[in-house]
Length: 481
Image (cartoon, rainbow, N blue to C red; front, side):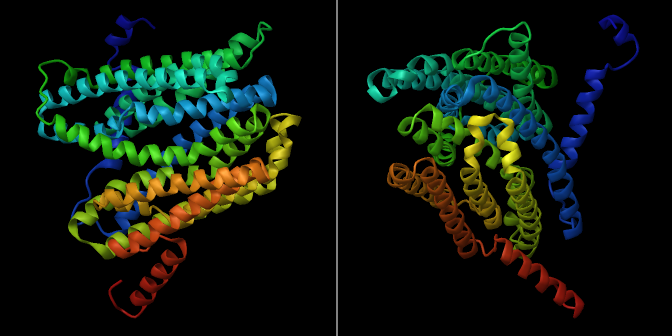
């Protein structure tokens, strides 16, 4: 169908899809009304969590498929090189963005609400320039380090090929932040996390079908190309749905606040990402590509358990912020308890599923990966334990306890690094898995205790069960829950 013919028949498919997605986003992100009862909050939580879970699951499945294809093509050592480089780039991308992708969710939403489009454009202009400059500087410094450090020199070429992903991931995160600020979370999740593995799979198949060979360097180059295509796609869609906001004069009066907020997000997110990826980096650097390849597959599979956390937590964040602002502690406790039981229950089921299917899942990647069963169990247990501690970190951030949150995340990084240095030489890759599981469990426990003391909310699964049972008993007696 030509564009002219489509125009004559009313809104096209793309326009209708945009309208549908906007409507879904608005229904999930609209502010809580004062009259919203706990049943209404729970229904919104469930709708948002299930909708996000579908997209998150789709992204995870597609990413799993792309990693499976690469693992079987590259072998254990080649996939270890690929996974180690991507682990470096993922962590460094958070530093390169200087916290601006998350800061954009806050500031762009505020400026849109005020119709202050000059500040809106000024923020995007500064955020883009800072993202490009800092990403390029970090990439140059890292490549210089790989060239100088003898233990890393063997991976200099793969790192040089994958280094552009630092900038691409930063810029993609900034685009996703703009979508979230415009109350279009489905675009942020779909374009950012679903389209990337789809494009990578298509590029891999296009090389492999004619009989072409793929090594770690070519796989990294194709990943960079997929990242570039995703960024172009995000930019085109963002211009299509919100292009009018980008044209006009710019104002920079709030620049100091932008940088302060970005710096706070930078430390917190950087520390969390480092905890998630530090084990992979340490295994690749201390044990070599073969061990890194096996560990990367076990780590990837264990992260499937984390799928249970993201959708519910994404809804709990804005909803809990509004309840905290009202001082509605009973309502906040009830909402958190429902969310924790939802995400904790799904995490437990996923962990049990991984335990049963571990031999089969690892075997899909090839015979060289089947020895990672112990690693998978330890890492999956750690992820499941995090789910049982609940969204304490998010609640502390919503309540304004950012300094405490930053201190705890940095302490977790130090603990994880120390445990890796002690356990990896003694236990190998299993030591890295134990170090990560222990550090994450300690972090979850500390955050849940802090949330209970400072906010008065129990975020753990056992506490949530007790709270809901207590509320049910009060209602049965005719009291107020």
